Structures are given as structure tokens and as C-alpha cells.
Image (cartoon, rainbow, N blue to C red; front, side, top):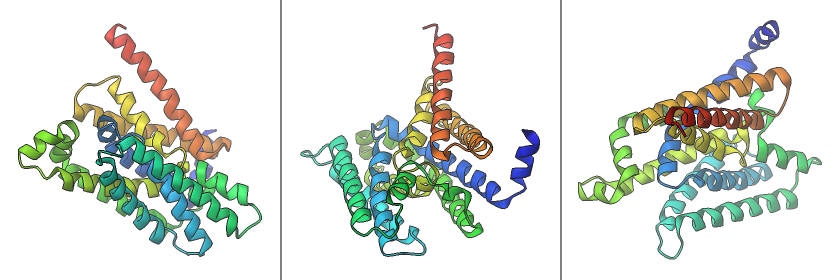
Length: 279
């Protein structure tokens, strides 16, 4: 198996897939803790369905670089979701459900009405559950992913204290002069970038797993925000790496394999946490 792995790693497309997969896992886990604590765990689910709808439009109009359309639409949806979720008449969970279901329905309708190929079910399935295009990445796409990932990490590190304050007590943060609305807006934009990056890796239906599982697994073992964040990053990167290796060597779907590894690792964290806490 080791020889097989070494042979696979000799191919650039395999190395590209591993690099991109690890970078996406790292970015997703950084903001996962904040989203879980703010009870916005499923914002990834809603935005991923928006990205699915945008991707359908990009496919219909035959855009060469689909990200030029998908990324702006997802960012706009993230901002609208943030604003709508604060409306007293439409709470955050309801807003996410509305956007998620609506975008998914319109995306599927567009793909049906303007189907450009015979294998519609295959196109929809690969978009929802992850595409093999993660194994056909070009050097330019890898560089773009790396640049965006570095941008996400830099934003998180530079604004760590502000993000921490807004996460735990937004009202108190405002009272102390922190521009909470601005940092929430920044979080929404960063989340949208992560969702678009992860779309080809795990598909629009599984993206939430990259956000939720590392955070809740870390919370089983640690209590402080910094410790939970650091462990969730390590957890996410290791699980993504293992999942990619299994998918490359054994051939199962990449996205589903990574999520399955996350689930198993979460179970292990629950067991370890129960043993540590004596429960």
C-alpha cells in the first residue's frame, strides 16, 4: 500500500488535491467554532445551496471560470442572510431554511430546464455530494485556493480578539465600542469564500460537516476558545488528509469519505471526553 501511495503522489494532480483538501479543511475549522457558538452551524448548509444555484447558472451560461459568478452571489447571500436573520419577523434558523431550500430548488430547476448534457443526474449528484474535479485541479486553481486560504487565516489571526468578543457577547462588545456589525459582515464574507472553496471537495450537501464536526469534537475535550479552535484545526486537517488518502487509494467518493472519517473521529473524541470527565 505504501508503494502504491508513493506512486500516486508522484502525480501532480494527486498532490494538488491533497493540498487543496487540507487548506479547505483548515479554513472551515477556523470559523466552525465561532459559528457553532453563535448557533449558526447551518449557515454553511444554506450558503452551499446558494452556491449550488449559482453553479447551475454558471453551467447554463457556460462560464469558463465559474467562480467569477459563484463567489459574488454566495457573498451577497451571506450578507443578506446575516441581515435577514436579525429581523424580528424572520429568525436566523428560518432565514437559513428559506434561502437553502429556495436556492436548491431553483438550481435544480435551472439544470433541468437548460440541461446541456445527457447525464443530468450525474451532474446533480456530483455537485451535491462532491465532484471528482478535485482530482483534476490545475496549478492556477491550486494557487487561487492557496491565496484565498491564506487570506482567511490572516483575517482570523489579525481580528482574533474581535471575533472572540463578538462570538461570546455581541451586545457587550457593542457597548465597549467594538463594531460588531462590521465583524459579523467580515465573518459572512469569509464563510462564503470557504463554502465556494469546499464545493468541489465535499459537495453542497456535506459542506456543513467540515464546519460542525471539528468544532463539536474539540468541545468534547477542551473548554477554552483558543484550545478548542487549535484542536479543531488539527482535527479537521488530519481527517481531511486521511479521507483523501483513503479516497485516492480505495476509490470511494472523496467528500463522503472525508465526512465519514470526521464522524468516526467525533465518536472517538466523545469516548475520550467521557473517560476524562468520568461520565
